[in-house]
Structure formats: C-alpha cells, structure tokens
Image 1 (cartoon, protein in one colour):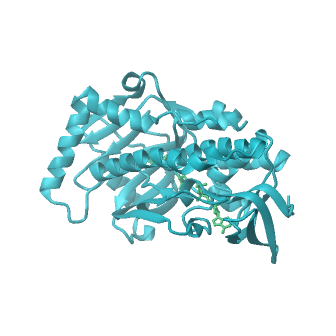
Image 2 (cartoon, rainbow, N blue to C red; image 1 turned 90 degrees about the vertical axis):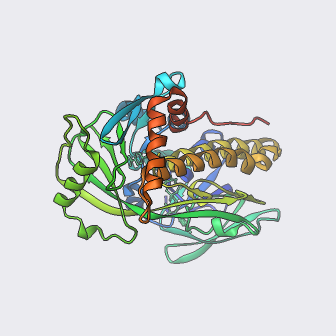
Image 3 (spheres, helix red, strand yellow; image 1 turned 180 degrees about the vertical axis):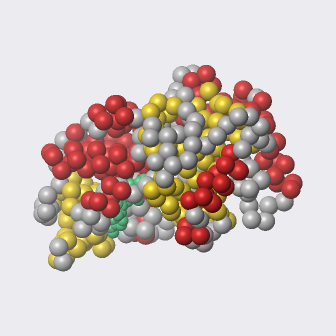
Length: 398
Ligand code: APR
Ligand code: PHB
C-alpha cells in the first residue's frame, strides 16, 4: 500500500506490536484507520525484543485474527527457574496461580504475522512514512503531518493513537505530562545462538559475577543475556568469552551444562523504567513504549503494550459507534493501574537479580534473603508467579 487517504477515523503512528495490533482490532470492529511507520518493513520485522507472552496477550492476538501460526509454533511454559547460591529452584506457575501458563513466541514473528495480515486486507499501512508533528488535539479534528516518498502530507483524523515508542513524536505532544524515570547502572549483552535450549524453562540467575538469563526463540535457537556495564562494546566480547561467562554465572552444585553453538547476533541493551502520565491529551492517546518503558527482566514490555491497545480498541470503537467517549476518558487511568503494577514487578526482578557496580555485601545478602524466601514460601513464590504470568486485562464496558 503506497498512498493513504487524507482522512481517517484513527491515525495510528508506529508499526510496532502496539500500532499493528491496534489497527487489526479496529479493522475487525469496523473502525477505519491508517498506520504510518517511519522505517521500512525489514527494520520492523527484525528487531529483537523479549518474546514471553502472557495468556492475555495470546488471547488478544487470537481475537485480532493473528493467532494461527502462534497456535502452532509458540512454546508453552509452565514456570521459570531461579538460580542463586549455586542452587536451582523451579517455580511451577499452574500450581501457584490456579492454572496459568506463559508462552514463548518471538516478537519478530508477531510483527511479521500482523504485517502480513494487514498488507493482505488492510487497513492501510505506510512504511517510510515519518510522522513529523501532531496538532488539533484540542479541536474538532486532529492532524498528523508526515513525510512519505519525499513529500509532506497531512492525515486528518478523529483520534490519533501514538504507538511510536519512546522516541516518537507522540510522547512529547502531551502538554503538562509528567514522566517518572529511572536508569539502571548496567545493561544486558544479548545473544542469539544456533544452540538448542539447555533448559525447558527460562532460567534467571543471580550470581556474584552479575545476572544472566537463559531464554529461547525456538527448539533450535537460544536467546541468552549477560549483565554488563553501561557503555559496553559488544566487540569486546568474543564468542568464547560469552559462553565462559554464561557458564560461570549459571553454575550450580549439580550436573548441568549449557549447550554451546554459533552466535548469530550480539547487542548491548540499556535498561530503563519510565512512565508518562497521563496517557491521553484530547484526541491523542498514547500506547505501548510511547507511554511507558520497563527493563526487560520479566518481559513485561510487549504484554503491557498489548493490554493498552486492547483497552484502547474498545474505547475507540465505542466512541466511533455511539459518540460516547466515557471509555476514552477512562483510558489513561485504566491502563496506568496495570502499568504501575508491571513497573514495580520489573523493578523488583531487576533489582533483586542484578549486581550494582557499587553494591555492598549488605545489599547482596538482602537479595539472597529475598530469593530464599521465594524458594521457601508458597506465598512469596505465588506473588512472583502471579505477576510473571500476568493478570487478566481489565476491560471496562460502556
Ligand atoms: N513516525 C512514524 N513511526 C515512528 C515514529 C514517527 N515519528 N517514531 C517511531 N516510529 C515507529 C518506530 O519505527 C517503531 O516501529 O514506531 C514504532 C514503535 O514500535 P516499538 O518501539 O516496538 O513500540 P511498541 O509498539 O509500543 O512495542 C512495545 O514491547 O518489549 C517491548 O519495547 C518493546 O517493542 C516493544 C514493546
Ligand atoms: C527474551 O526471550 O528475550 C526474554 C525473556 C524473558 C525476559 C527477558 C527477555 O525476562
């Protein structure tokens, strides 16, 4: 699709998981929309992000008609493993949460599935279409000024969904917004490896050498992470150094070995927590990373983005059908409840499992006391499991 109408009901900025899923949900509800994406299709389809899906996220993808390949290929996980003090502790999610599971399915694949659907039967999706500014947010009609094929154009809309991430134009267009932020004094070095996973479930390891995580993309591809100092150059980490360090951080007093394989990608990811309030100004609604960022420990980013757009699709559909904006009026408060819960959980997982550069022995002992409590107490384990597996999405009705 290379041209867009000049007028639509919902102008969606950004073709990440938030914008693409919102567009699909609106399309199925009979609400017309147009998606503008500043990058090309290949860029959108190859970005590596955490691929752990809560049940509510899986349900939303099915509701959007994007669950066919997911149903065949996603790996169902019944828990995670925590490692500390050279011991491994398995948390059994169905037993701790009354039957809930999580799913492993890469974000790249979700984005590919959604783009393929959208290019097949709409709504319009324009790549290389960069939103430059939004205005008219307090008036009768909102406008997105954007650049496409070298020409500047305007899309007039009833509503704008700002799904353009933390560095997009939407986030900065909420006058009087307050942003609450925290940067962490460490980053993750993430790798993809052609190596079958060495564990059935994800392994989160606390170690005196720093945090490590063993995740996976498929039965043949591993995704692993090491805590590294901010500013680390991935070029300083040879493949052997990475595998040796992973071995050292995952080591337990039992017979366990990490299967090595060719490393096909290496990148350093900074870590940040951030929430912008409110998530709405007039005709502009923020969703996903445009409104909030979590550090990746616990993989809440995608799940929060999906929860936002499920609530937003209901609200925009109600406003379009009946003119009633009550759900849109409640949108920011509805989402922020869940956002802050996930912010707390992500912060808790991050600060309990990582080693600060200037960490004292006292803090390490507190971390170990907390982890021991989770291993020993069903209540403490259930608290972690409930947050990890995710709560149902609160969907107010008109
Ligand atoms: N105009 C058009 N598109 C833009 C603009 C702009 N001015 N600025 C940014 N974009 C696009 C980006 O190129 C990107 O494709 O918006 C999209 C935002 O997508 P994401 O960053 O993936 O954000 P979101 O859809 O909210 O995804 C939620 O969950 O795991 C987390 O951060 C992770 O991707 C993740 C997220
Ligand atoms: C991932 O698979 O990339 C992943 C999984 C769980 C996390 C973070 C990242 O907590």
